[in-house]
Image (cartoon, rainbow, N blue to C red; front, side, top):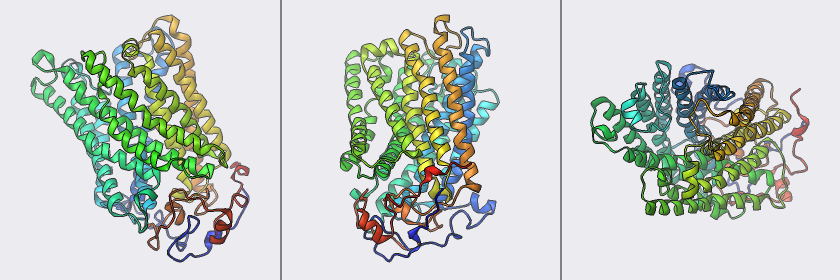
Length: 576
């Protein structure tokens, strides 16, 4: 890697009147990582950045546990006969995979890790509004995770991650009650995180940080927090009612004792469809930041993209009924929900179109975060378009409970959320750790993940369209070729996930030190040291520029910001 002395060593006085300026530099030896090394200081920390790292370790652990279950599922489906595990064991495999990946990884990953780390930095605050509640949210996450893990280890759950009744309320003899209680506790972790983000955004913005100077990352997390606050109590109450019914045999959902199973579906999906956007909106936030930085342009239609996040949050609460097209719902209700399901695609499409317009004639750099962002757009577009098939009444009847649904779900959730998460981790890794990772390996892993993902899940669209039902451990022989392709893709995908784990851990010790702003970005988080000090900023920043206002080259040189010609050539650093 070429060695360039950072011009950020020069102090700047307040106010910061240019996107290229920054606060007075912080001594490199004083930052949030080395403030105190004791275990007690980490477990009792109120620093949002350290809490984000606690989430990072916890969430990453459960991601790899969930990935092991995914690999077992794909190994089982290599052959048509179901000769690896029995049907009952297979039911537990896909249930455990779903519960861990959704409740312990996808929902908390971006808000709890990157949101926790970046929200105060991006708005110029010293911390979140309620630091103690922030730490409590991590402890609640860990308590809920331990309860769910206990249910899995002592016998498991076989109902699917959706806990459909009457199977979960009456016929399943597995540990549904314990798992339900664990998810109930996890819900409070989400609620507290959402509350913290909303209050922080309203009350702790730096002087000059108006609503329309906020990064789109903040807009998306604000919308996500609204869903957390309004939707999570519904799923918590629903699972509590399920536990109550199983324990005391009171007829709530079980039709054999006077309950209504469709009521469970209404309550469950009233939360669970908005929960899709708890996973998606933070990923969209990351993509907006990456696209702007690596195309060197303001986001096209900033206000449209900002308000589209709010629109997605609102529409998300109005489309739960499309999960009940084949569950005794009236045709009239189905038509209404079908129409709204098509309408919710509009604000999502606004984001994709505006990202594409931002890229047009941009000065694009194909660094690792940008490759993940471009992969995200492709996979999310496929996931979104195939969602329109499932929003159509006639097509949904044919495709319900087939592998088409599995493929669509993974293209949106995994292809969307996970690629955005990986892109965000790579983008802010220099800020989080103060170290650079090997760019060559980063680009290679991004390519492997993209290829492996498509090879894993695109064949499942074909399987579903041909009629292969999901959740079956055995299938007719004519589906084997596509299943083998899918399992081979899963192996490639596993390699793609493992490579970043290795080189990111390697970079903590051997990676070159990062400058304060290695990407020449515009956000406030890049105007402080890498890693940031415990208090985030030595002086309170004063914001006088617009969001994503990339300074002209002459201004960059005046205030000490690297120009594109001066940018360090990170591609020459391979880590070898």
